[in-house]
Each structure stands twice: as C-alpha cells, then as structure tokens.
Length: 305
Image (cartoon, rainbow, N blue to C red; front, side, top):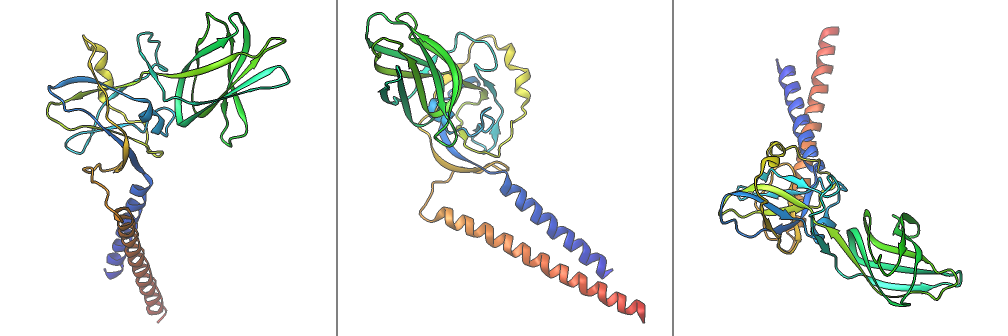
C-alpha cells in the first residue's frame, strides 16, 4: 500500500513539473496597445497599425490577441488583404526610411531604404526630380537574415506614369532598389515612400469595456474562433477602432492576467519565483524517487529471505 501511495505521489509531481514546463513553453505576449472605450455593443474593426504589425513575430499574424475587461481573450476574425482580393482597403503610410543612393560605374544606381524596425511593406512611391523623361528597369530586393545577402522581390519599370508600385508583401528593415541606367544619367531620386495595406481584426465588443491588442509571442498558435462563421453576414461595415501607442508588457498565453505596471526589479523577482517553484518541485521529485528506490530494494531483500 505504501509503495502504491509513493508511486502516485511520484506521478503527481511529474505531472506538476510537466504542466509548469508546458506553461513556460507557451510564451508571453510582450507588446500591447489600448483601444478607445466602447460606447455600444456591436462589431468593430480594430485597425492593425504599422507598429503593431511590425511587432508581430508570426508571419501569419497568429500571435495577435484581443484582451477583454474580464482578462480573457476575445474572439476575432483577421481581415487580411493577402487572403482575399479587396481593392477597397486603404493604404497606411509607414514611418519615413533613411534613403541612401549610390551611382556605380557599372551603369547601375543602388538605392537603400533603412527603416527603424522591420515593417511590413506592400507598396512603394517614388519621387524623381530629374530627368523629365525616363524609362528604367529596376529590381527591388529585401535584406537577408544575415544582413549581407539580398533576396530579389520583383522587377519593375520606372517611368513618369509608373512611380507608384505594388510589391510582394515583405517584412524587413532594409530594401534596395537596383536601377539599370544604361547610357543615361542616373535618376535623381529625392524620396521613396513606403505603404502597408490596412489589416483589421473584426470582433464583437461590449460597451464600457476596456480592451487591448496583444502581440509579440513567437510560440502562439493560430486561434480557432467560432466568430469566423458569422462575420460574412454583416449588413454594414463596422466602425473602425484605432489602437493607441504600443508599449511593452507581459501577458501569459495560457491564463491572461490583468495588466500590471512594471516596477523596478519586478521582472527579476517574477523570474526568481518561477525558478524557486521549479526547484522545489525538482527536489520533491528526487525525494520521492529515492524513497521509491529504497522501498523496492527493501522488498527485494524481503523476497530473498
């Protein structure tokens, strides 16, 4: 009977240790942006601003969540222009990039665009001061992962009537435009503006509640919500909510908690507490393992006698 009791205790400790490790493996949402107060119940479109999309670590935006006033995740449907053809979606201007142009002796001009962080880019708009008449082949490239290699995105033609160009969606800190000049003088490019097509989260929100958009969890998986079966029946376009400035946070993926303002040393103390709990569980696991081993040896000696 004692052996069975010890075995059950050992299984319990192993289970607790597994759950603790699994909870840690789910990661946290490290960025948040507050929404304006909701005045009446209904469907809303939450605009995903360029800073929010930039902080998403999942290419499919699966690490987005809406945190409700009850500290639970709110179901939503992602309205992504990459998933459906929608020409009515507006374009959002990205923060200005640093532009550097190098006119090489190989009859090519190389224009680098450096952004403050990795933004999602869908369109480029050129401002060319000189010459008046031009038609040049160009290639748009994105910076590779190691910062030295470049990946070709698309080939385009620059002309006075073709300076607003859609490109394959890319998330990057740097773009390079390789312009073939032939025997012509290099183009004088004064500015290149970058744009992102608007993306939204469609959600049913209740009046008086305080909601926030969360993102930045590399371990998050795509959520499965029933709401996707009902948004196609909307009779009118929901009102748009624009999130406020994005700021750092820490919200669990398993059990959302109320946002708490960070205090000096708070993150360290939380980490120490977690490690203390895991250490205590490990000590219990070793203790019960030793006790079970002693019990088995004692039983073997008894059987031999």
